[in-house]
Image (cartoon, rainbow, N blue to C red):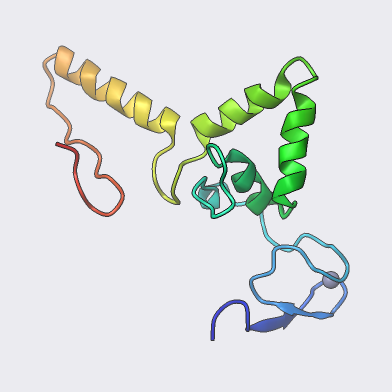
Length: 133
Ligand SMILES: [Zn+2]
């Protein structure tokens, strides 16, 4: 039995809902907790960098509405592209993987350590347990 067939009562309206639901289809209450570690950009709805899909999954807002929001914010001091770029930098591509910022600072720290003559740190393993050569 997977998450879509397991049922539970909604804590707000007591209607029968899927156990994995992040928003109740009856009363529209948000059921999932805000968990930044679950944010990732590799969802199936991904079109460019996956930021809109990541925000949509995390907030239970339709991905089309998130895209319209980013597009509308473009006309407010270019806030849409700025926030999209910030999401690309901070949201990891896969769950548990480092974000672009974490990877860049990790590489910079390793380079600084080598430059100072310290112990070289091993490269971070790629998703799937492989290591970069
Ligand atoms: Zn409900």
